[in-house]
Image 1 (tube, rainbow, N blue to C red):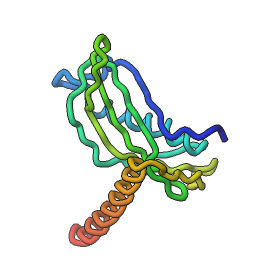
Image 2: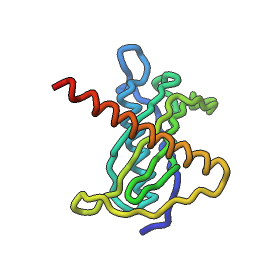
Image 3: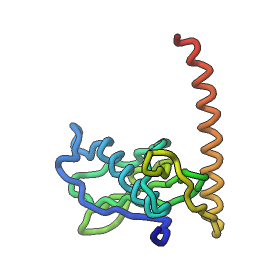
Image 4: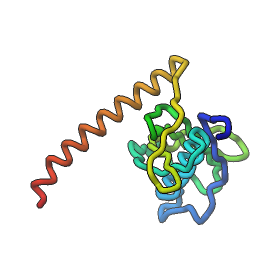
Amino acid sequence: MSEQRRSTTLRFLAEPGDVNFGGKVHGGAVMKWIDLAAYACSAAWSGKYCITAYAGGIRFVKPILVGSLVEVGARVIYTGRTSMHIAIDVQASDPKELDKTLTTHCIVIMVAVDEEGNPTPIPEWVPKTKEDIELRDSAIRLMNMRKQIGEEMQAGVKYLK
């Protein structure tokens, strides 16, 4: 396994092919970039092939213009036995000015898998700074909320049959 990297940043220019009918970058393109950054970050941390298990809480804060320099930052904020919670921030700027603006934020959960596609153990990430402890605690709270929401949704499914 290579040395673990907790964070990864992808950088590129938003292209005309990424545009939606409103003339801004399509949300689906942004979601693809988020998934790519989450994969790069989780693979670097675990040293293994990883798959997306969850992407949620996606907040599209500001639109991205075609021609913008886009940065998709990803970092591990919590690890389970086989999974990693990755915080993603997407920022954009005019490449001539480099004054970055947050455009999108979310959490992605990635799972490391072996050659047969089964979840496989990963190294634990242990937060050391106050900010890292707060990020980990936030990930745990979100995990508990998702569990509650899932239980509520499952309870409602019986009425849809």
